[in-house]
Length: 114
Image (cartoon, rainbow, N blue to C red; front, side, top):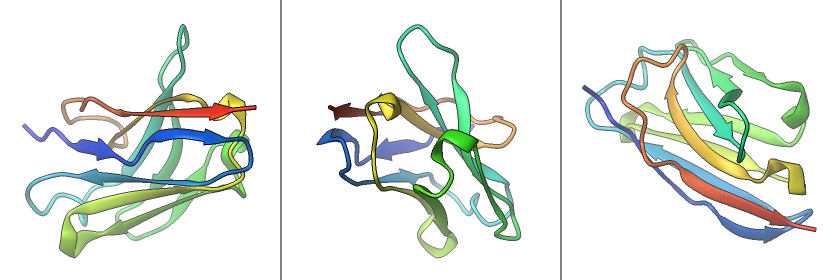
Protein backbone atom coordinates (compact mmCIF):
# COMPACT_ATOMS: atom_id res chain seq x y z
CA UNK A 1 0.00 0.00 0.00
CA UNK A 2 1.25 3.44 -0.91
CA UNK A 3 1.32 6.11 1.76
CA UNK A 4 2.43 9.53 0.56
CA UNK A 5 4.36 12.10 2.54
CA UNK A 6 3.23 15.72 2.31
CA UNK A 7 5.42 18.68 3.21
CA UNK A 8 5.79 22.40 2.69
CA UNK A 9 3.00 23.78 4.81
CA UNK A 10 3.36 26.56 7.32
CA UNK A 11 2.06 29.87 8.59
CA UNK A 12 1.75 32.65 6.05
CA UNK A 13 0.01 36.00 5.86
CA UNK A 14 -2.91 36.56 3.53
CA UNK A 15 -1.63 37.23 0.02
CA UNK A 16 1.42 35.07 0.51
CA UNK A 17 2.50 31.87 -1.21
CA UNK A 18 3.45 28.34 -0.31
CA UNK A 19 4.56 25.33 -2.31
CA UNK A 20 3.47 21.94 -1.08
CA UNK A 21 5.19 18.70 -2.04
CA UNK A 22 3.92 15.13 -2.09
CA UNK A 23 6.35 12.23 -2.28
CA UNK A 24 5.58 8.56 -2.69
CA UNK A 25 7.68 5.50 -3.33
CA UNK A 26 7.52 3.68 -6.59
CA UNK A 27 6.59 4.92 -10.04
CA UNK A 28 3.04 5.73 -9.11
CA UNK A 29 2.59 9.28 -10.26
CA UNK A 30 2.75 8.86 -14.01
CA UNK A 31 -0.08 6.35 -14.30
CA UNK A 32 -2.60 7.65 -11.81
CA UNK A 33 -4.84 10.66 -11.72
CA UNK A 34 -3.65 12.54 -8.65
CA UNK A 35 -5.18 15.11 -6.41
CA UNK A 36 -4.59 17.53 -3.61
CA UNK A 37 -7.23 17.53 -0.91
CA UNK A 38 -7.78 19.73 2.09
CA UNK A 39 -9.68 19.46 5.33
CA UNK A 40 -10.49 22.41 7.53
CA UNK A 41 -11.51 21.89 11.19
CA UNK A 42 -15.03 20.55 11.43
CA UNK A 43 -15.37 20.14 7.68
CA UNK A 44 -15.11 17.27 5.24
CA UNK A 45 -12.04 16.58 3.17
CA UNK A 46 -12.42 18.11 -0.29
CA UNK A 47 -10.53 17.74 -3.54
CA UNK A 48 -9.11 21.12 -4.54
CA UNK A 49 -6.80 20.28 -7.46
CA UNK A 50 -6.45 17.35 -9.78
CA UNK A 51 -4.01 16.25 -12.49
CA UNK A 52 -4.81 13.39 -14.84
CA UNK A 53 -2.40 10.75 -16.04
CA UNK A 54 -2.13 12.75 -19.25
CA UNK A 55 -1.41 16.00 -17.43
CA UNK A 56 -4.77 17.74 -17.64
CA UNK A 57 -5.44 19.86 -14.57
CA UNK A 58 -8.69 20.84 -12.90
CA UNK A 59 -9.38 23.01 -9.88
CA UNK A 60 -12.17 23.60 -7.44
CA UNK A 61 -13.75 27.00 -7.85
CA UNK A 62 -12.39 28.45 -4.56
CA UNK A 63 -8.78 27.96 -5.69
CA UNK A 64 -9.06 28.43 -9.43
CA UNK A 65 -6.55 30.97 -10.70
CA UNK A 66 -4.51 30.86 -7.48
CA UNK A 67 -3.32 27.25 -7.13
CA UNK A 68 -1.31 25.21 -9.62
CA UNK A 69 -0.87 21.46 -9.46
CA UNK A 70 2.09 19.80 -11.14
CA UNK A 71 3.88 16.49 -11.17
CA UNK A 72 7.45 15.31 -11.67
CA UNK A 73 7.09 11.59 -12.35
CA UNK A 74 10.85 11.08 -12.55
CA UNK A 75 11.12 12.26 -8.94
CA UNK A 76 7.89 10.57 -7.80
CA UNK A 77 6.77 13.94 -6.53
CA UNK A 78 3.72 16.12 -6.95
CA UNK A 79 3.43 19.80 -6.10
CA UNK A 80 0.82 22.39 -5.27
CA UNK A 81 1.85 25.99 -5.79
CA UNK A 82 -0.47 28.20 -3.79
CA UNK A 83 -0.50 31.94 -4.44
CA UNK A 84 -2.65 34.78 -3.15
CA UNK A 85 -3.51 32.74 -0.09
CA UNK A 86 -6.61 33.60 1.90
CA UNK A 87 -7.57 32.82 5.51
CA UNK A 88 -10.20 30.41 4.18
CA UNK A 89 -7.40 28.31 2.65
CA UNK A 90 -6.39 27.32 6.18
CA UNK A 91 -6.56 23.53 6.38
CA UNK A 92 -4.56 20.35 6.47
CA UNK A 93 -3.56 19.45 2.91
CA UNK A 94 -3.24 15.88 1.71
CA UNK A 95 -2.34 14.20 -1.56
CA UNK A 96 -3.77 11.00 -2.92
CA UNK A 97 -5.00 9.49 -6.13
CA UNK A 98 -8.31 10.62 -7.55
CA UNK A 99 -10.41 8.88 -6.47
CA UNK A 100 -8.36 8.16 -3.34
CA UNK A 101 -7.08 4.60 -3.12
CA UNK A 102 -3.84 5.10 -1.19
CA UNK A 103 -3.49 5.26 2.54
CA UNK A 104 -3.81 8.83 3.76
CA UNK A 105 -0.61 10.50 4.86
CA UNK A 106 -0.20 12.85 7.81
CA UNK A 107 -0.92 15.87 5.69
CA UNK A 108 0.70 19.26 5.98
CA UNK A 109 -0.86 22.14 7.89
CA UNK A 110 -1.40 25.42 6.06
CA UNK A 111 -2.41 28.39 8.18
CA UNK A 112 -3.16 31.74 6.58
CA UNK A 113 -3.44 34.73 8.89
CA UNK A 114 -5.48 37.81 8.03
